[in-house]
Length: 236
Image (cartoon, rainbow, N blue to C red; front, side, top):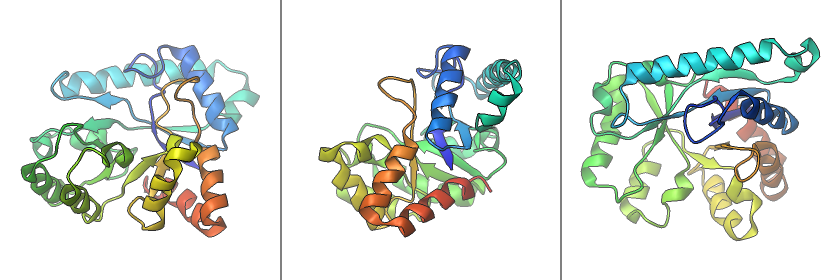
């Protein structure tokens, strides 16, 4: 099982603050049944040059990989495989970035895209529709559940109609008052992926296995198995 959206790289963003925190999160991922973790630190073009971000990411990954290499062999073998990526914040000029392929998930042509929290515009939707054709890359829409209450229905419908993968967070599936909404997205195939979006071991821990267990109970084994297969397929 693959966790496609995490903030585990040490010192990169508001996720793991250091290597010890990163290792703790990876151990918790293992306990959840996850065997592959995509490391997707936040990238905001308005705050940081892409080259600087990629350099920071490489250094953080090197630090984490060195810490893992120093662990006993038995523990190293239990930890998930790590894949580099990013959570890319939307910008109108996104299609023009030459560095965008380097922000994709592993060696795939898919990248995790965070849409704005402020109201979407028709222009944003138009640019989002043009993005795959202009870049040859596929956006994976991150945590769609965050936008359901604040965006116009026609804009949400346009995003669902795009035909690109849509991700929901695992956490709402673990709360009775939020569960029905995200289960509805899965039932209608408006969302095709679940990820933990983990930031820490307390308030935002790895919880993909627990969420998938809820899907298995509520939607059946076939739905849960199909979801689990998609998690890894997105990296191909």
